[in-house]
Length: 54
Image (cartoon, rainbow, N blue to C red; front, side):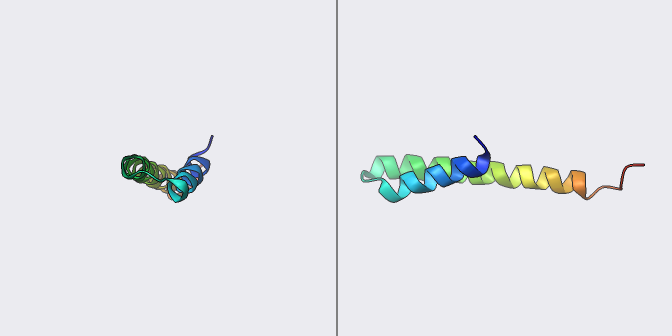
């Protein structure tokens, strides 16, 4: 499963979460997944932003 799919699933779960503890857990997981995606994007930018290969 890609990170984007995971994020979308967490968002769907959050919309349907009823209990406060469940919502808090999902919010934490979603924040972690979003941070992981930012790291992935930053790493890709570093790779793509470097000098072209010769």
